[in-house]
Length: 557
Image 1: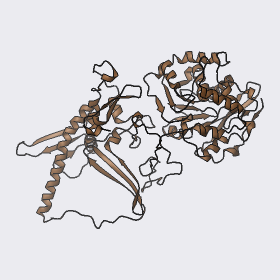
Image 2 (image 1 turned 30 degrees about the vertical axis):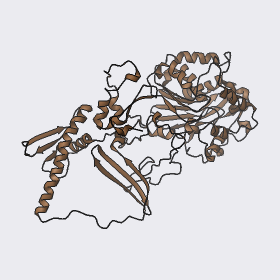
Image 3 (image 1 turned 120 degrees about the horizontal axis):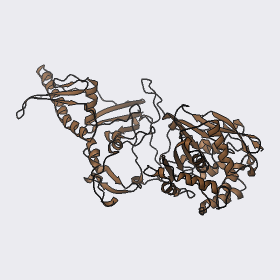
Image 4 (image 1 turned 180 degrees about the vertical axis):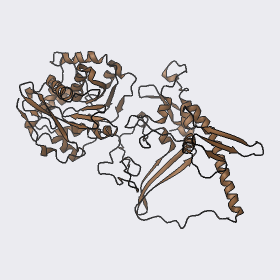
């Protein structure tokens, strides 16, 4: 089998793709050998995520996902299919078959790399090849994520959009890979990204695999790949491990294909599937916010030299795409603030907990932090005798303890205020009669960064700002509800609200989704903040909000 190998200088200066290529050799099925390239990032002993691209892209497609997964502590393997990327490219179209693609990847990933416990992610042809690997090697895979892909058997007619693409791939005299990928995205790609998709193909002689791929999709029931795919579906119909779909709704070729997987694969039941609204076929390139990281970020460290990432409030920018506005259908638009990658709660109860655990607090004749509790020495009043209270850090944290802590916090706040009044009287007795004031206020004209912490009834919030030439250049506020309502983060940790309601027994009796009120859920949410039911929605599990739970005018839209 004659094959071409793309010169390495074609891959110089790829945007956001600094990864070192690795290689293995596989039997070509015709007495020779082929070199398969792959990216391998993250700890070798960590759980492995396998990212498989499709037609006519290569592993560069996953450049935005790889660093996120690696930062989460995972190993990421992203191969280039034979005929694509840095992998060898047989020159004859007849050298490429569906079965050979499956076999080449099996040799590379399972025989050579010996991958086990794999989370498989496949898009386009990555799904067609990868799902066969999963079905034929069940013991090697732990989880599956499919995105804008399928597993056709030829028993059902293909969409007109696919047939048009298939005809185009065979008839166009100029098969411009980068422009094809860009055309399959909701937002046109930057010229340097288009060039990166063109990089593996110096001329048409390198494009045999890209050209022939659309013809290898089974469109007839007697296709050579039809029976193997039917066998794979039979296996997947018993797959009970996690199986997730992540499709876009604006891909004319695969739109709606996620419903087939959700219906037929048992492991898909009850999962939080994702639909990227407005996303194109190459959904890895699409999103509702443009990245602010591509041009670097202004503050790689804080003033003390501690490293900062692009998501730190001093660095983060919001660049919404104004053509994608279907707010209520989102899982969330909230950010996921973390403290040293740990989920934290904010609120009156959190203030008590941290104060008690620290065992340190400013001088106060009425309060004492012991390390496990806060003792409160309440003085006598006109209507109440003197009394001692003690709030102890609870062994179990739940809605009841949040509400109980809020009640103690009322006394705590009163005693802090009373202490300040006593201090003021002491100072007045010493002849002090002026309030503290700052010197003349001036707006700085040079570049500054700053942060302020403010204690509110709902908990602490932060104000981060950057300024230059006397004006704000960036401002970010993180409120208590932002901490508490934070969504799942890149490390797989749910936010406090979700953690609080997960596994909550539903005792309410109801006949349909429309009559479900969620009364068993709301107390947990309200325990964080008495006003929170104003913004809590109940969904029926199909990404459709059926009830807005509002208790005041702030729920009006």
